[in-house]
Image (cartoon, rainbow, N blue to C red; front, side, top):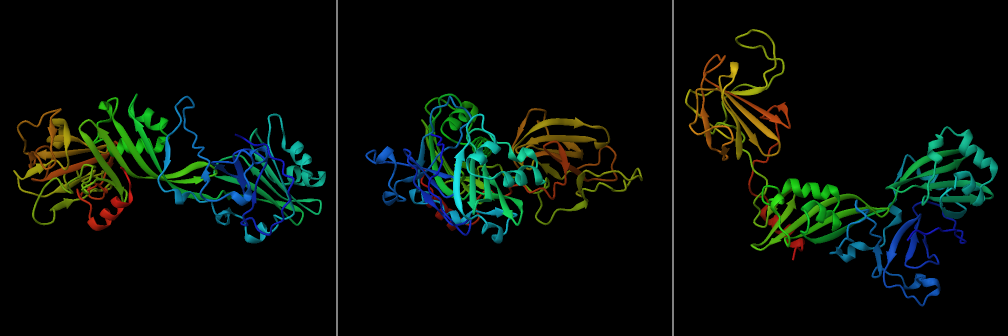
Length: 456
């Protein structure tokens, strides 16, 4: 319910950070401070016009106005269960952050405060005139200042707030939605613009949904954001086959969300429960990575090097875009890492993978090219021979031998030339940050974290 508010109460304050609570004569909604709206549950309809009494308001019956803007209006209403109700306290308006505005400027927001919610067909001049702004201030603000006229374009449902002091415009706020709003403050005879953030709060939210159509559609219908859905589909694809979910499979997702001006501006998933006929599995996002309840990573892990040895790897030439070629004697990029081992030394796959190509390739001699998780492709070259059975389409396990060190193609001697591509781009395989540990490191800390997330 959008409210067109014309206040009849004028308040003087000395700083923007001072919280003000104004109870409007409307049903089920209050305004806190500068236009921050909250939803009020269990309103006594016996109050005049259904307005809540300020004396009766408490954190027990105030909940955030959950205007999370699901992308499809036709989808069913989200099931939004607040796990931690104590986190839904009224926001501290003193935490409003000003960008590019000093405390001294904030002190100019004094005098009589009025506000107006823009209707279709309104323009800023008409609105400001109706709120008592004189023609001199209008001219200075709109035409004598250096601000673009686009800054003053308004649309229906925008909110305009003015502060009048001794008949002059002391400050103007233009609220257009989003996480911040524009403020024009009069200093001497000019107006200075600043952008201020709405106060924010963090709440813990639980979303429950059954699979009826597909994971993404049903998750968004339940109230998850597109960012959250994409993260879950990407991070859990190795333990959940999202393409084979069946009707009746259930999910529960617990997230921490930062809410500003009624919108989700940041989100951090904490835990996921997946329930099917075979039972249930819980997954937790701990220190940026997903683990199952036993602390085992759900993301495939990688070996650091394609040759396994007891000591440090014998690297004879590194990734170098300006290397002098030892045979051709010209400078050209060396896109791989060379390992100096004897002919016949086993070369392994650094993770579970699939063979893209196995055979001869020009100056590289015998090669094996593998497709790994996370958009990674590796190429092993100059092999003396390719292991029997390593052919295109074959699935290979982490640590499985794919071939043997050699000197085929153009080569100065036995070595493995190893290249890595990430999302199609050549990278230095020794510097790529790949998950190499399959278990959580701090077990005690992980157990405490798991205990704090209720997925039951």
